[in-house]
Image (tube, rainbow, N blue to C red; front, side, top):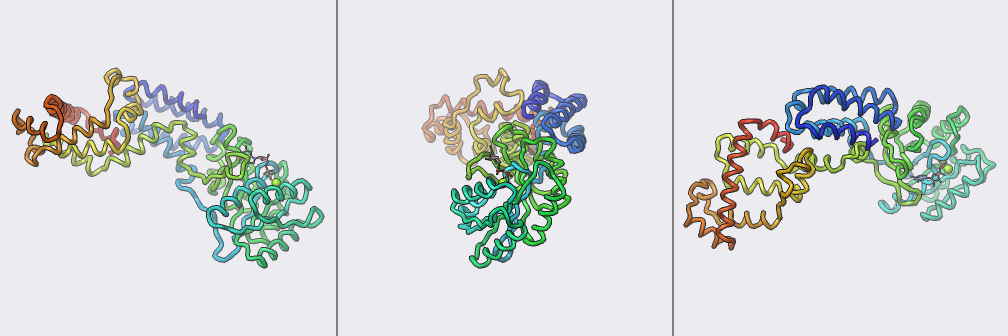
Length: 439
Ligand code: GDP
Ligand code: MG
């Protein structure tokens, strides 16, 4: 999927501006990419429609960096579809919090029971009890015992001859006696959804009143994951999803369509067979992963975080009135510095990486420190009126900052040049610069 989208956007990166047909082309690519990643067809259709509506419009077409804008729109839309923020586990107001694991055979239920226990122990010093309610395969109980042992958690079991409903009843009674704060029920799965399994699970739900019914889905099952999620949710009204095996083929497709089809949050992701490979699901990270454009997105985020909108407007006014002075210059340097090394930032901007003007562009943090030292040596009047800086004042700055006079002269020259450039940019296309800086 990522490769597909990278390809879709590489076309945009080459151009300065995006036409409506560019947007149309890239949307076609996005649709294909999502379908290839086994995202549900209906979900793809709606997703692409939303993105197109947001992308075709003035903000994209008039921007200096259209590719940046489109990537952001696609990323935001992916994130929104998957649920904006991470959703924590539901908790009971009194102990125990009861968690029921459901899902097809091999999805990763038993493994996830262990991972979740480990997590709860580490984070809350929890004392969970595990209930072995998969009685159809003798090996299933042994497996839960092994998992329980490896994370130091007791397992309640009654062998394979007792009805799972009865096992759950007695397990809960035991948890009450022992004051366990969590009970995690490991249930049976089938290769496909069938009525007998669903009835059994619905009965266990009725008996246990779980605070959380986590559907465990194998992310490698692709398109089928959507139908499985829908089937379980319709019958059991699940409260959350765990998406496993994301360490394998990294298809984010299942995350997108499960969330869309069930409306239920994906709470955790499994990324390995080991007991510590369970992570909280972050929709924004998953979106990044699906897009495979981490660097670009980090840049966009950083620019937005660091470039305060109000400051940007004030700066714009100053440039317009040509009153941009050394105080503003200091502010601007501080903001740019917050974003990290200058060369890295420039390289992340589409079209900039290969821009010949920037080929040898390098900005040493030391240079910034030196420039600041020179500005700090100025009097308030000099900072506000750079024209005051005659040769004798410049010599004083050199002495005050401990920098050679040539460097002082060079910096003032650069300052004047960039002031002029900014003023021209403003008259020409300030809109674009605002877009670039996230204003
Ligand atoms: P269950 O039938 O739903 O209880 O599934 P299991 O917990 O027995 O898991 C089935 C197989 O998938 C086992 O071999 C697990 O080790 C493996 N598995 C589970 N979760 C993950 C995961 O996140 N990543 C990988 N690579 N393997 C996993
Ligand atoms: Mg199992």
